[in-house]
Image (cartoon, rainbow, N blue to C red; front, side, top):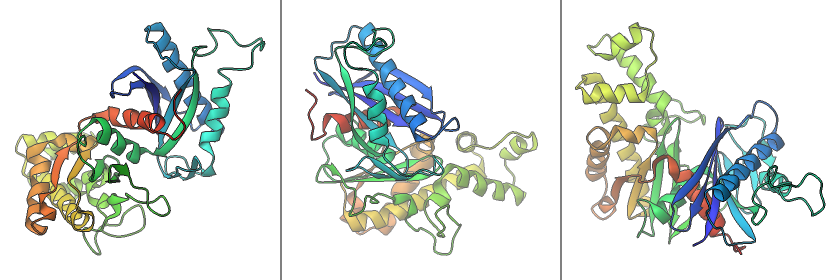
Length: 350
């Protein structure tokens, strides 16, 4: 069995773990990103430290990685130039422009295995001496999640997929003929910026009416607050009066309790996602749409049924056959997909 290390880079945390070719995760590590401490090279050092800790745990667990080197894959937020290992832009890391993060991380990983004779090299300070880590692939974090679901999640057995992650924003990924599609300039999959309401709410991208402006976490809360301000009866009013912050989770719990405003909010959210998926289905004709992220935890009745109903209502009969399902891997999708980047890289893991 082959292994690789998957790293999911976020603005707050770095999550990493050892992943087998079967998609099983072990030896997980979570470290703060510490982006406020320094620039890209500081973050690169934190990524290398996360990898080191994973490999230390691997050795302690007695897991045999039969290899001279182990591949590392990285999922990162923003516009990623996968071929060159560059982060062109990332909203999570202000000021980062055309950062050669793969080179920076590999320079830090090389320090884990300095040349023989280096007085600083010892088994306690460095990673498993039998296994040299090399960062072999980096992609956008949602593309990594999409790859994880394709290989070991809800997308197994399919060759044409779209994926949505519903969290702070709305991310997307596209799979064509069994491969993640990047587009001519690495910007394919920005499904959260599909327009669902012309002249609608402003989106962070500057456009109006994007799906993200309705289905992103902050925007779900804002839409709910506006309905509460209209003084409609709702159990959520007591939450805001007590000074507690609304969250999509609290709104979903209120909807499950039958609160009319909360139910309406999720019905509207599902409708907007269904409108977006209708356009996507007509353009790409995928076999399946996989939806993950925190908002997707609202579940079948509140979210997925309205999505499917809107798709069925609007799409032509053949595109409307696209399945709409919840992601299977949950929070592990980014780590699993990133690890697959390494396992499937052109340079093989020896």
